[in-house]
Image (tube, rainbow, N blue to C red):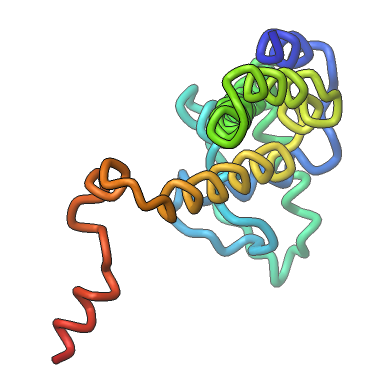
Length: 189
């Protein structure tokens, strides 16, 4: 339900002020293989936002020199990408679809965590609350980094909980990754 409600906004809500910026930075990484435009946010969210338009054939006109042009040129670059081919709504929708998997991931991890610590019913209610919280849905539908960050944080905390459990089953799934500190110490000796 949350996914459908978020996706329904893609063709009705115009871009936010920072969506072109994130798209331009993500496109630089996908198209040119570098991440030099701006380092304030991790690249995962920007890659996710730029992936849809990139796969649809949207490309940057060329590399920008931020030292001589100034950082505001990224807004122009992102807007050019969104309006490329006269398909603004399609390009904006493709960019926003990149954050949708993170909404799903956040809901699933919330359910798993609630189920693990309390009960399946508690996990379900926690997932319903996350899915129905308007700011969470808004972040997933219109923001690159703020839509991805909560899901990444929840996933990392869930992974830490999973890794710190002492059950033989969860440790055996790690295979060669388990106890890397011991392997490093043995290699040094």
